[in-house]
Length: 442
Image (cartoon, rainbow, N blue to C red; front, side, top):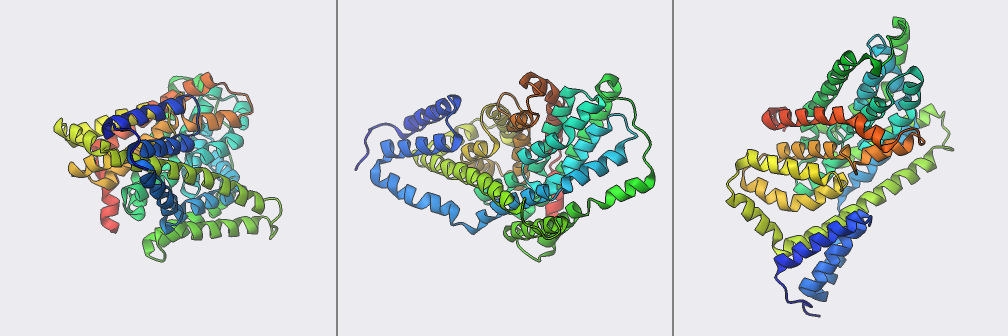
């Protein structure tokens, strides 16, 4: 069947983009909205044969791509690590070592979440785990309810920047960049985020002492050492996965399998060889999360293909280039775009929607795509805690069992959004934070 509507492709693309936004506003799932909009646009603008040709090839291009296998495997590694109980021991150790600082529970959440990010890879998983683990204890000890949930939601975003990160893998695949280089590029910005959150929280508690109770009791040094021994599982996984990649023992695409196997081994050791009660549930949870991500990827690729064939990518790219704004001006525009989109669209979907437009412009402006990826990922972090749709906000709120309202978590996360914007400025102004380590290893 030939083209149904004789319409300028750019106009058709803009119309479908408006339709997509309308579907998202009324609550249609992102994967369904992007997929249906892309299919409808291709059918109306390019005919039945073209549409069915794309539908036959695009889903298989994702599910049959070996590089995408790393996504469910990193997810499985995080689920196994969570089920094994190493997060509980990690948080306990951080709490004991930091107890003599006022606001120690905030710091324990920030530091423990930063370490767990190195094995979870998911901002939502990080947020849910530490809400269940830390929030009841923080309330019991008299910590501010708002700042408690704010610190948990904001610290959960570390999993986007600290390798191995699912968001990094998605960017690497879409932008055709090295996963290994991106993992290295995220190390210093990730550590900077942990340090900034910790320092900012200490300052806030110093200025407003009512946000945290008085200093806790002194913990014997022997007890601290004993607690520190319990974090060996996390450290072992980090060494195996990241050390194996950079030592050349296996490729980044195989690191997820190695990490999942290692996490399963740790869980099996902790459960004394029993598989009941954790193994089946872990597989089911990892499969559920993976299916959601792959559905979004397929829907995003269908919509992106439609946008590309309409010529919108070239049109928008040439329009921005004609403005002669330069690399920094382009980064500022991207930052504003992502902060606005992050209010209504989840992180992965936002990247799939925007990268087809942004990548050609970044290449034309001769922007380092590894550094650009870190900027995008930091913006994705910010979007995860930006009201009204920030995914981490709802993940934390739903995990508190109704003890926290939406207003509470929004007010609690505001100081951390300010800190994130300051970190974003540092990453943009000092690209060496992202580029130095990859340049030394590759």
